[in-house]
Image (tube, rainbow, N blue to C red; front, side, top):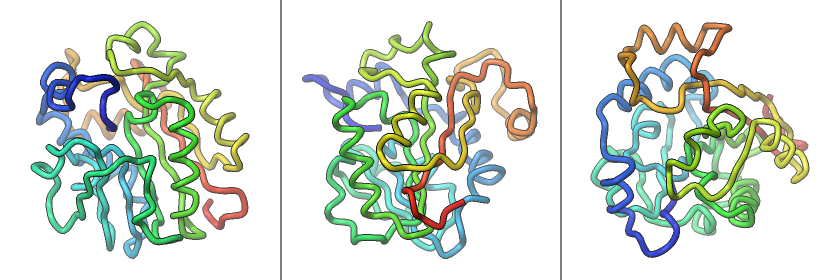
Length: 224
């Protein structure tokens, strides 16, 4: 996740709103193994924007993995051979053109102004290979409106419909849209177990589903 706006430090944000929780490691290890891995070829280069504690990038398998975040603490959690870069997602000029096959961002773009989000999309487009895609996981305001602004760094609002429309209007084709992909948080009365996560992923009914997953590729790409 990108830096919180204003004068608050990233460490303050992580201590007050997003402290490390080992349950997230269980969640992401299961998600990568049973859902996201099918989208990542073995020879792919994966770029994660707003890496945070590294739960996704540490668990996904790929030939090359790159983690980007403005939070210096990220380097304490990302495991080699992942390449960690303390930088903003709005400036990816250090990545070669068409070098990335799979870009992932979890709970990032609700923290960015709309103009910055469009800048990120433009940057990502130039870095994607012909088979590349951008993959977005974040709260769906349509279902998470009651809790959305409990996070004081949320500044932009998106529903699945709005996000897909924005992508299409900016030259992307939507390959996959799941409005109720996951519950909003691991902080609940239910245990976080690989079995329950797998059952949830395959269930046609998504109780408490408040996070959306959207996968898109530039118009004219070979991604499907």
